[in-house]
Image 1 (tube, helix red, strand yellow):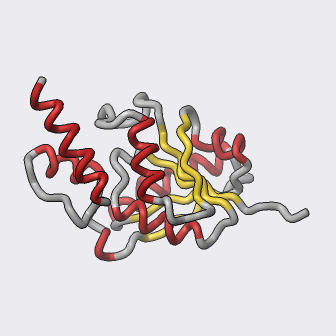
Image 2 (cartoon, rainbow, N blue to C red):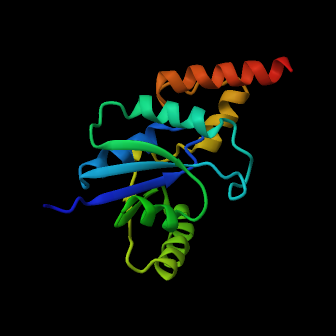
Length: 169
């Protein structure tokens, strides 16, 4: 019996971007199973999420459907507790720019303190995705800008529907 090497790629994914997809695709090559963990708790996020955890999960599942060893889940609480619960030995994080490094460095050390048995691996996103963030995508979409090519088409459509609904209220 072989032990599966499981990676956990946690995040808000509000919404999933081409940068997230790039990191997930490359991480999927490193693990027998990659779990993309959608963080459901709004208590940890700087701003309340635009999309519900279920909406984010559906968008991520559609975006990652071609990766047979990727599963999308929803979780809350500490990431290391969820990693332990699903048997993940490694947490995957994406880096876009040097500005991400300081935060990820602190987070990796805190996770190491909380769960020394779980490693953290940071993957740099491809250069064409280095400027993309979910926050920037939402801001541009909210103001009527075109985010095509930065997120999957189904996410472009979901953003348009969400902002149409919000503006109609």
